Image (cartoon, rainbow, N blue to C red; front, side):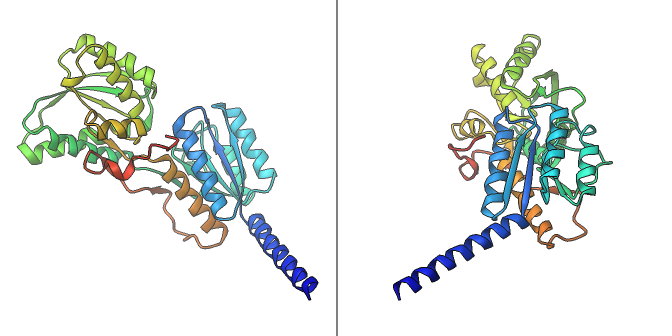
Length: 323
């Protein structure tokens, strides 16, 4: 009798394992990151892997190491390994088009995250936060927080010609203009200079040093991401001017910036949660593999836009987050 019960238990366990293996075989997801050499992208990869595994999928994850040719080869290799869906953050919007189109032609459901890709690419949808809508909310917050004050803004941008950066800064300035018109019946701000910080902390520090030399009366620092603004903050601290300046970013929600918001040393930032973007793409990929994704899904899927301020920062601050 005991032998029979044991046999039945072993059979049940084997059946569960077989079902899990079958599910994984039906859901094989490839993750192609353009680089993992930055906390933001590392957080995306961690979140995508975690969510795919939670859904019972087999995962292949590859680091493109910021090399277009390697990322192309990575995609081709994963397609050869039989992935059913691909989550890709493209290194180059045009350079990845042939690899993405080849993957789609092979029956792979392709989901782009965060970075844009050329319109000639054949993919299901691009998942990202809304740069313009986040910017609008941050700009409106700035207008409300500085009523009646003449603003002299130092703008710190990522790199020249970058469409994401342009969307972010124009969103904030549009929100600021609208907010000031609503509050005061006029727009009263000046962008005293634009620096280029290459999206990094060190770049933001250097750009701010240069801007401060020519514009010592700056009272607002606006950056296109948190990392550059945190660098700019260091530059102003070194010049003993940080107490007179309001800091804010169009996007990201980096944990160091959120802590500074909580501490009252930073005004606001737009929610560009890498973990949320990646997990959303994986959820959509699983639906596509299960045949449950609507055929008319939009080419862009936005996460909900939010301005993170001292009023709501506790909801988003996770001190153990990768980013």
